[in-house]
Amino acid sequence: MDEMTGPRLALVFPGQGAQQAGMGRPWASSPGWFLAERASEVSGRDVVELLLRADDAYLRRTDNAQLATFVLEMVILSELRQVLPAAGRPLVCAGHSLGEYAALVAAGVIGFEDGVRLVAARGEAMRKACADAPGTMAVVLGLSAGELEKAAAYVREDGGRVWVANLNSPQQTVLSGEAEAVERCSAVAVELGAARVVSIPVGGAFHTPLMAPAAVSFERALARTEFLHGFAPVVANVDARPYRGSDGWPELLRRQLTSPVRWTDSVRTMADELHCDMFVEIGPGRTLTGLARKTAPRVSRLTVGEPGQLPAVPAPLPSTPTRSVA
Image (cartoon, rainbow, N blue to C red; front, side, top):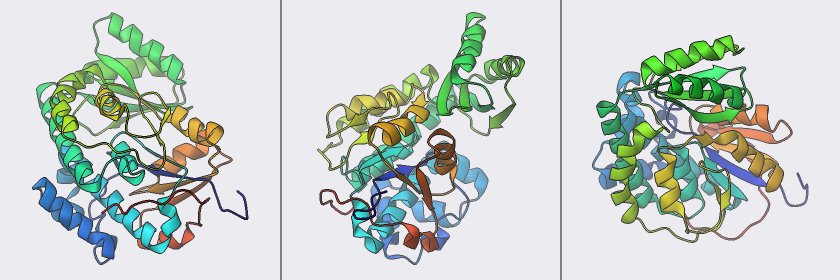
């Protein structure tokens, strides 16, 4: 960190699975809460209810989890910019799966209301795909992504439909596919030396070819969205490369539904290539800061999931001016 200019800041946003019942309550009296109310109007869904009163089971449903998590991240980002306007000028943004949409808003590539519409359409498309082709996911710990890919390929050769879906850290990778195939692949992973396999309570095979119907139906929402030049690059999930401006994002977001999330490489891109020295996780939980600690241990990490954590964020390296998320 340069003591004269502040840290080279990356804003990172978690995705589905970070949600918690009542996660909006600490923010309900903040000025940025109007974004939750506006999201309800734009989406036709009661986002305020999701953030304040929905129970874990209802909030876990794909369309509910995605919309609620995205909107809360926007509320927190708005509050961060009120407390520290320079935080609206990060060096780079990135988001894990669903979090990529929050990153695009934070970087000025899409507007808040377009983000709400996209996330609502994405969540509904994925929910329908899950109903038509049920699946599941599992976290594999202590085995490299390369070894796990060999296990998945072995099961696919025997007719199983299972793929590597999230490359989260050097020792954490996620399987996704039909339940029976995921179970078989998990057993093979343990035989290859995996320390542990943990099931994820989802009903779909996210980030696999089984989401192809969702990608097709989502294209209509992407086609109606205005993508702007923005003011900061966003590191894309599908290839871990930083994209500046609007070119390519509709295709990247469509591909993201059926492609693995390359988060390990995304963290390395931000830390090693773009020389970020602080990651600030915006949203519920501490998932991404934990993963960053394993992949880029020399990078400082902060989490902003509650109002009391806002003052800890230092002023970042100056960048170009930005617009409000509203």
